[in-house]
Image 1 (cartoon, rainbow, N blue to C red):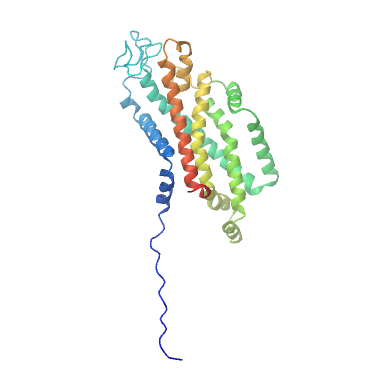
Image 2 (image 1 turned 180 degrees about the vertical axis):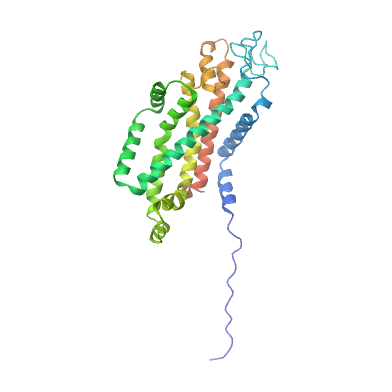
Length: 303
């Protein structure tokens, strides 16, 4: 046998490095055009809410006796001073819609934040400890879910009294079971994985296991549910405002604007149409954004 040196072929390096997780997320998210459109609409609503005093042509509560039920500027009798017309007591509808965006976003974010904090804690306890704690928490959530959401919110507000804060608390209680169930399911799936077992063997305390090891890996479904929950909170708060149980006049809240305009539906269409469109477009935008986040964060749905 010859003593020739055997040359070992070199292994070719991979042609490209894996994409950054943020870039990969954006690639999947941007593939959903509806989600991108929803994100743009939400950004515009957020800008209107942040800069409402600078954008709004009038103060939302300012009345003018000379312009009762003035039509939009493109109709006969309209004026560019009141682009979307005025309501029954001469308040500018565009200004009230802009300031109403601020209130609606605050309601949605505050309700979801409260529901997430309480729901995550209850879901962690139910999924991690199981047993009696799991049964007690989940049976209470099942009881809350047996009642229609709006009816349950009405009952809670009727007990606490009408008002914006009570309406927000009622809506938070209504959406709470969704976060508890999602967190519990994710925790049960994560507790059986190797990294949790390794952390437990290494002596990690229960609180650290729950909040430092398990909870961060349950974030994806919670983010999606939170995005969808903002739209639900806005819609329920508007419904309570329409029924007179939420924000009280003269607060520029979209549901309250609809309630004030009920008797003028036939002779002043704009006082009802524009607040309704604001609710529709904002809720639809959050739903589209939630769908896009679900597609981008769930590995099973990645295309």
